[in-house]
Length: 515
Image (tube, rainbow, N blue to C red):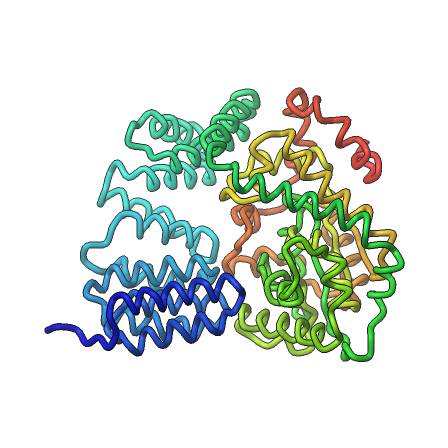
């Protein structure tokens, strides 16, 4: 039977174009309204519903997203395809629980592919069902024995389990296959590097990481150009956002009352932010939001509307009226609660994201009551760890394609913090990764005292708490493991590779007492 449609294909295409344009100019409600209209006019179009669900999900309206996905699955010509798309779109907007739900349903349908099982296995790895990942990978390989992503996942899981030689051999065999696509090949080189590093074969490990970077580099031009712009903006903020400006902003204006319980957990990636966040999130009086874009997208960006792209951060923040700042505050907490799926009530919110370092002035302006936690770690260990980490290519990770770029980005991020720190009146505390690892009880007490939160032994049982939820950080695999000291001073294994950049890191090494 011919499906009902109240709109021509051309008109439907124009609605989609209008929706994309509305999203580009940050008119998110208009995008959703246009897609809702498209769905009413073409009610049997599952693709429209999937796109609408994704739009709702990106706005943290997960119930509405689920409603759209459920309807799409019900009317789709191929239920399996709709389930897979719903799962992948849920994963894209960061709702791993919803993604798991749909991919699990897809895994029981006829015609399911190996990709579904391996993607589901990777989701399981991040949460409380990590021990079921290997069985899913084997189901994928039963469907397609030469499936490259599944072979790589099997090798990774064997490495995590300690079967290093077997995992190494499997990874090397995968790299020999002509059928291995460039993305999987790049990931395989990273996997081999991680394996060889764990075996103490450091020169071979570095060569593997360099091979991975070589595969990534051709696609890095655009994100690298964006990063240059970000670094230039950071240098501009260092020059224009003075102590007088920050101290004036740091006074809690009566128009922004009541004060909220908020702490920003930032620092450079791979400095221990995930470990500290998981420890604090285990406290019954604390709730953490892990690596969202809410502060940037919902609190800062609305203030920039109407300004040219060349407008400075100082111009945007100085021009913000109290009513706009109140709206930014309301947006931030509303979307954070939507993301978390629960009310914050009187609990302290920890917003953990290393990328928030460069948003310090915006935080001070919008949330003058906020406290800052900054994770510190030996700069050489930080840079090495960033260089060795498998990350999707984006402006920040483009810096990690070379050790020189990694060091330059570290100097930009932590140099900005060192510049802003003496200018702020907001309370701040630097927390060393090495102290967390060697004496967690003392370090946790010091942090909780700073935050004004009473001691609770639950923070020492953070691993049990972490197993109850998905972890979004790239370091998810380490969260549930006992604390280990082997990552302290790891840079010495690669000292000859870091030597050319010691001079650039020297001011930070000295300032933080890592000489």
